[in-house]
Length: 331
Image 1: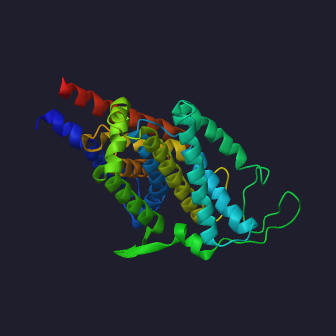
Image 2 (image 1 turned 45 degrees about the horizontal axis):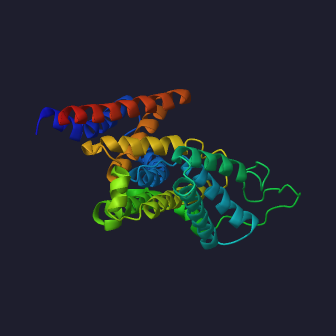
Image 3 (image 1 turned 180 degrees about the vertical axis):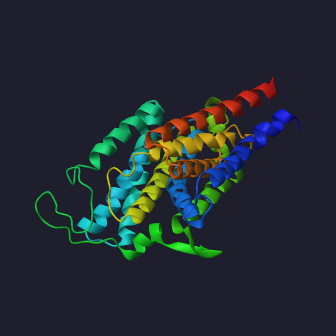
């Protein structure tokens, strides 16, 4: 293995280790368990959404609606429990149904209506941003809130539901690993196995690599692409459920950065272990990288308006580094 091959394969992991070491030295308290908890919590929701984006990237698509789907699911969970006074199970089912329906609509528009994926999912993003604000006239949903008609909401968030976002498991020290991180790990393992070791997953890669060839081989290309967007919608809904459970309210502004962070994590995943393709393991590592980066910058009191700029630099460098070196190696 040449030096170039080693750089492509392990360069990003070395960058991640160097980033951790730098923040541990430069930012007081970064290496503490409390900091780890904050990183894990931020990584969990971003990572779940990024895994959904990865599914669409695998089939050669892209989903810009994930952030708005997550926020809509968060608002729906709050609405079901606070306004309709239903239990946690009904709220979770409603959120997952939203993800499935949005995924089917996105897939239908892209596959059968031939709307480009970026335009279809961008349109869905704007539609959902408006839709989630109509029932409450743009206000967030919280226990005891006053509705537009003057009535007071009588429901509350179920303790079982809140536990999804607030409970922590003991791991060497008490209350270290949030439930949301366990959900992320389970979903990451499931989607990794699905994509790498099942016929369905391998065919999704085939569709993304060469759609025409897959079609000539008899693969139901349209079905695979639609399923990819359904998976993305479901994962975005799960992210919205976790966000609602953590906040204990339906906050319309809380999902503003979900799209950018999750897309960054999914694209950074291309650089992990020199994969140069969408993959679940790389996406999980990319989400961890984004979480570490944001936590470190925050603890160093970096202005909030510089964080997206730094994320952009890291993303561009990681992708250019990976593809430039790997393409050079092929030549």
